[in-house]
Image (tube, rainbow, N blue to C red):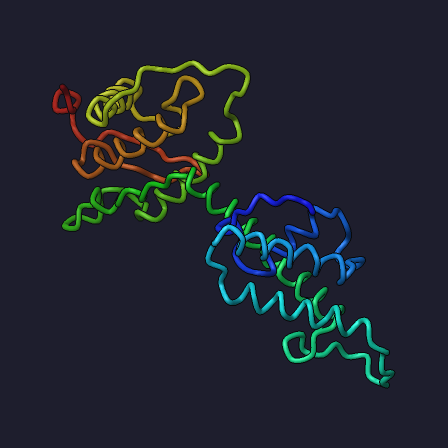
Length: 251
């Protein structure tokens, strides 16, 4: 008699145990021998009982069903005009058993795929977007020239996409990051020194996404404080000074 390593907790039910035993036999589900599978299953259940392990009733019900199916195969087959597979629990047949195993295997494989997707999703971390509406001045709608806040966001999104397309992949050089306050000073100084500039023209070299974001926030804050004004120019934003140079922001 073949020895068994009994691990009842490893199975989720009698169908799971049957799939395990069929896998050990290395046979296709469509080619299973009811007699062999029944003998394997019953031997496994008896091994569990011999070790005085609690056997759930569903496992015993399946054992009885398999024995009934095995005995039926020894009897003459009654010919009928119907090819429909009867309900396995009401009238056990080899075809009904195969159908149940195929369905269970499909559900089990689908559950495994979902589990893998869940584990992959746990590796992802998301961050809520910042509320840029806090940079709006509700008491003054003339801060951006002929631009609405939506226009500014659309222009920013186009520029962000340009950065994403132009990002250099061959080498990454980490630049010194500026705080929002430092970038506000840098932007205002550049606007005054050049008597205005476009937002994208403000960058002397290809910006990173982080530089683009902090620069855009700096522009919004400068507009809110009426240090600069914005006008739309094609897919870019034109920045011009609103205050005298001696009154510009400093650290």
